[in-house]
Amino acid sequence: MSWIIRLLINGLAVVIAAQVIPQIHVTGFGTAILVALVLGVINTFIRPILVFLTLPLSFLTLGLFIFILNAFLFWLTGTLTPGFQVEGFMGALLGSILVSIISWLLNGIWKGIRD
View 1 (cartoon, rainbow, N blue to C red):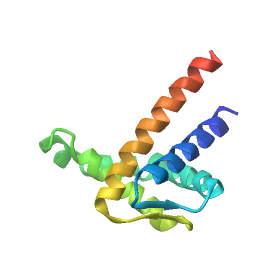
View 2 (cartoon, rainbow, N blue to C red):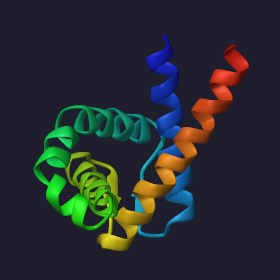
View 3 (cartoon, rainbow, N blue to C red):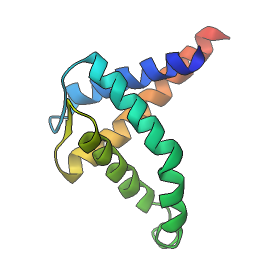
């Protein structure tokens, strides 16, 4: 049950990011839920491999390369999900940061309400 709530929260974060950032377009809340699901799968299976492979570069940049990696994965989600479009590097970078922050805040609020 809690993963469904997290999926809904992440979908809401995608919708909010699409409203705030002009380079991100989502056709509806159902598409945002699909984006949250695809992003979750990508972050679960592909991101750890890429983080490991780019570890020397992340080390040299003091961890800032992780932002680039997150932007790439956010853009990849946009290419894999119909109805969701991310335009340009800055849109992907800002979108990945904003979705992470909103998701973190809303999950924290939900956890506080639930406890």
